[in-house]
Length: 337
Image (cartoon, rainbow, N blue to C red; front, side, top):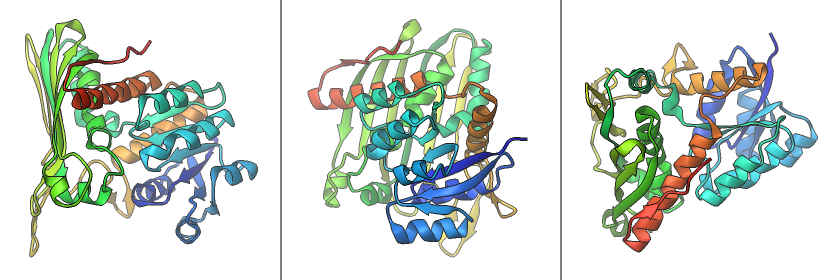
């Protein structure tokens, strides 16, 4: 079995999870860690038996890997991803694809036969969401009428981000994708309103939450909401729900509780049991499945389960949401061929 040489670009919070997960892949070898922070990059590379490079140009010059996982802040995705794709390397880039539609389009246009792009929409590997999408696609709930999707997380995340990303992109990209993917319809027009009270009170130049009404193909109407407003002490950092209502049935996804409840001296918690849980010393779950699919699709020249056009459409929706917030008017979503 051919093993793919894999590099991770970005050794921060999510980069560490990706490195731990990649170490358990049976179809890949983690050969390189790319990070401009020499101390962090070198220590991470040492921990995982890889070689540290300060930037992707150095890694490319050394032919360090066959495929790259880009785990950088979303505003840095474009230049690194385009450079790798144009060099003929396959890239898995963490969601969101980019922080503007123009950057996302540049990334999509940089794909070549030798360098293909997959965006890490992790819910596409969550068995609950996958079953929902399959049921709708097979006609299990009849004609889709309307739907909603949204998630809230802790206010301290918004404080830590400190304006480095919009709640629209950091959180909302999941629900923009879920509403369209599961329903099988596309968002064509949005009208959005925002709340900006909590973050400014903490000295953070950021919105608190966004609420959006969506016009969709097939006569469907949808709603989206996302925010970092949950108070300290709430037992879960993911307060998420997706509903799709059809003529003959419904989809009701409530993912706040993953079946594990823990009470300690610090209070109640609902730990992650699906996205990247540690199982017998290994990262497993949705993140592992996402990486495994990426590596095997690269090796066997298979289609990715997250088409680039879907990821591009998600960014187009977010661009429209931000434009609607700014203008106070409904905004059409840029059509994706």
